Image 1 (cartoon, one colour):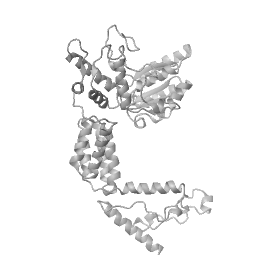
Image 2: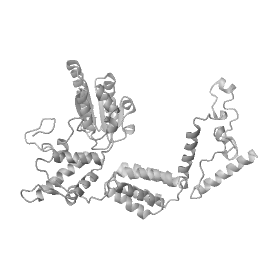
Image 3: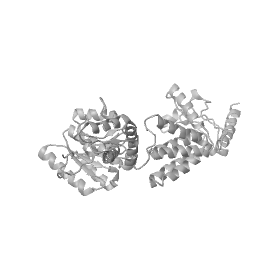
Image 4: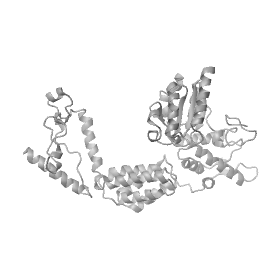
Amino acid sequence: MVHDREERKPGEWVPLAERMRPRTLDEYLGQEHLLGSGRFLRGLIERGALRSLVLWGPPGTGKTTLARLYAEAVGATFVPLSAVLGGVKQVREAVDGARLRGSMEQRSTLLFIDEIHRFSKSQQDALLPHVERGTITLVGATTENPSFEVNAALLSRTRVLQLRPLGPDHLDALLQRTFDDPERGLGPTPPDLDPEARRALVASADGDARSLLNTLEVAADLAAHAAPAGTPGLITPAVVEEALQKKTLLYDKAGDAHYQVVSAFIKSLRGSDPDAALFYMVRMLEAGEDPLFILRRMVIFASEDIGNADPRALQVATSATEAFRFVGLPEGVLPMTQAATYLATAPKSNSVLMAYGRARKDVLEHGNLPVPRHLVNASTGMMKQMGYGRGYRYPHNFDGHYVVEEYLPDRLRGRRYYEPSSSGLEREIAERLARWRDRGSATEG
């Protein structure tokens, strides 16, 4: 039977992931923050409103399917185009078809461009006039941050919707569907599924429905091949490992093991143990954790637990992130290892974290206090007459490029938020601040 919406030759094999593609919004799993009652996309669908969108999210979260279902729900023609395979010529053909469809059938066209970030600036610019005139409604899909990869002009004419990785419950429900649906799923006599193998399948999918179904399909074939004649076979953890071609580590990214390993990694960095930090980092990587998740944690750590004790720590962490984006896996593990060992062995300070907390407390408690008048630029004659900017002392006009001045609002005079530690470079910062504050105290005296 043909499972896809497009025409296929009789007997042509259709992958499980394609057969199980949702055909209605009721079948669609996840993205409740967009499709739940009262949410943005649900509202558009209920009103029959067609709007240009950019769907941003990791692979296997249903971007293509969501765009197709959106088009069907509002009565528009769905025209797919791949940015990898297509270009300006294909866009022009799609626009011509949309124009003809609109005049002859009074039917709107939703032009879906997969991997829109792969389009060049000129290719993206070619879409602009047609989106502005409403000839097409554009829905682009991307795994990359559209702020960096999509032209600002095009981005300003769309609404960015961020799709989230599917949770374990969503993946488990999808897994169950493949066993319950004899037509689109694993057939009328699917193999049995060991509970531990079930957990391994969900954990290894990493929020990616397509990855889950691809692995399941291979595992089901392996189990059937190894089964005695007349039996459906059994998918075991060993079968899942064979399907994945790697060992399935116990690391459920939404469960306790995930948080325990991440916590151990951070605490090892904080405790200045590079060996333990590397062990937990490699354990996460081998279990399929997104390397960028680990790198983001290291960037945060560089400010939260090191800060100005060694400002280079933040540079190392951000440079490792950029290096990983540039080279990818497997070589990308090397800048990650360099960053982890540097952070673990750097002097530690949480002064930045504490300073932010103190400042935020005052902001929330005191609200919008007026900026001291001498700090406000007198941009008009009336403001000059009212004394704005009067008495401000430009630090570069004074010895040492410092002059005693009050910058906080009057109600917060003398507040101290940032208190440098005695660790690393912060020792020098603390001494410098102490000298400046002593000059301020002497002046007040």
